[in-house]
Amino acid sequence: MPLLFGPKNSRYTYTGTPCPHNDLALKSNARTLGEAIRDYENHFSLKIKACDEPLPGESEVKYFLVTDAGTGLFHYVDIHIFRGEAEICPKQDTAFMLEPGDLVEMGELIC
Image 1 (cartoon, rainbow, N blue to C red):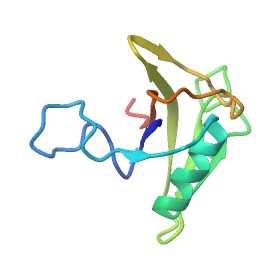
Image 2: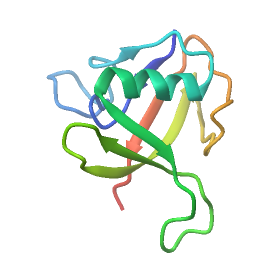
Image 3: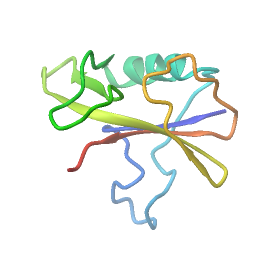
Image 4: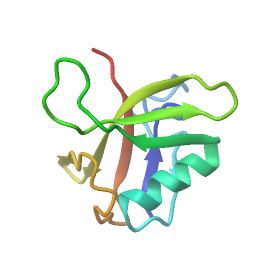
C-alpha cells in the first residue's frame, strides 16, 4: 500500500518524531501515480494539475500545480517516489506504476 505525502501532510511537519517520518501518511490503494494523485485530491479537497509549460528558468515540464478548493491558494509541487533506497522522479507520468511499499512525496518547491 503506497503512502502519500504532500503539502497537507508533509514528512517534514513537526510531530515530535524525527524527520522525515511517516506519522501523517495517507494510505492509498493506488496502482499508478495518477490514482495516487486522485486519492490525495479527494482526501484533502485539492485540485492537482500537471503544468503545461516549464517554470521560469526551467527547461523541463515536470511540476504540478496544487490548488486548495476551499481557499483558491495554489503552489507548485515536484513529485518523487521513494522505493527502498531509490528516489525516482516520474515527472508528469501519471501512468507510472506504484508498488505497495512506495512513498509518494508531493514536495513543495523551496527554491
